[in-house]
Each structure stands twice: as C-alpha cells, then as structure tokens.
Length: 243
Image (cartoon, rainbow, N blue to C red; front, top):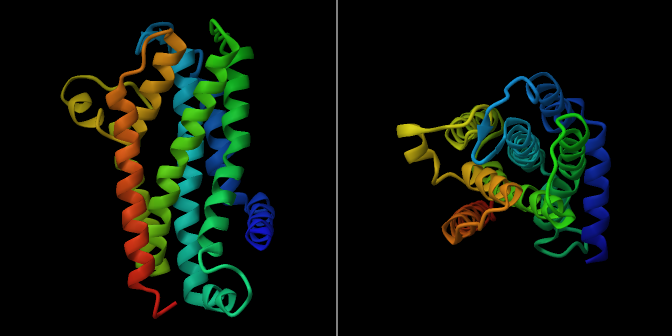
C-alpha cells in the first residue's frame, strides 16, 4: 500500500503542474461562480440561486477533473507502455488504478473547498448547521468517484485520440441533463433526474434547504458507481494482455 500511495503522491504533483487540468477543475468553475453566482435572485431547488450555483460549480469542477483529464492520461500511459513498466515493479497489481483514483479524488478537494468558501463569503450562503457544509462537500467529492471509475473504463478501452472527444461528449450530456449550468425542469428534468450529476446536486441542495434527502437519490448514485466500476473492471480485464 505504501508504494501505491507514493505513486498517488507523484500523480498529484504532476496534476498540480498540469495547466489544462487545473483550469477545468479549479479556475473555470471559480470564474463562473464569481460572474454568475449572485446574478440571479430567485430560488432554485428550494435554496437561493447562489447556494444552488455553489453546489453546481463544485460538482462541475470535481466531476470534470475526475473524468476528462484522468481518462486521457490513462490512455496515453497505456499507449506509451508506462502501465506495462509498472507491472515489472513490486507495485501491487491494482496499485496503478488505486493510485489514479486516489490522485483524482485528492486533486478535486481544492475545487470543492474553494467553491464552498466562495458560496459562504461571496454568495452569502448561510446554512443552519456546520455539518451541512461537511455533508455537501462529501456528496460532491465522493460523487467524483463515479466519474473516476468511468475514466478508467474509457482510458483502458479506447485509444488516446478517441478518448478526449468521447469523454467530453459523455460529460457534456451529463452536464446539461444534470443541471450543472442551469436548473432543469419539465421534460429535461424527467430525463436528467436519473443522472449522477443531477442526483449529486439535488442531494446537496436538499441538505442546504434542510429537507430530507430521498433514498432514491442515494441509491441512484450507488447504482451509477456500480455501473461505471463494472465497466472499468471489464475494460481492465479486456485489455490486460495488451497493456
């Protein structure tokens, strides 16, 4: 486990110097919140727009970093033979994947923390109890694990030049249907309510509004994690001889 954690640490250091990765996970969501967070005065999902957009942008940053950048790096390292080289070391068989997941989760922490701080002090979002802030951060942060699993599935299955457009297309669909950039309603909501992006936002906003969280939302996120984890396992096993 020590070697896996060491590899994860190296990966985090690499990501910190990846300008494109930091823009998508940190800079872009922050700038959007600063420009849009206080521009609408109506309530959304039972909370102020500032509270909703705080959650949405935190979700945007953490989920984006977990999927798009991670999938591309895995595909590139697979093509370059880096994964094969690691298999010749004493690193555990699943050490590479665990390190990738740990790094992806670790690098999303600043985005979640900064967006919640902006919501509190810039958007003037007030919650009834401190544990609600912790719960919202945990939901958004752990939700990124869903897309980290999907990144593994895509990165292992596809070639590098195929990964980025496909990952962006998939994520764009989840962005729109999940209500990341704007709240959804009507027919769009009827479809979008089954996406992990919507489920994460709705759980977080229900917590912010002091409402009981629907068990179906939690189950939905667990199901998505199981689906993407299953795809990741199949992809890894299906390419094991070629990696």
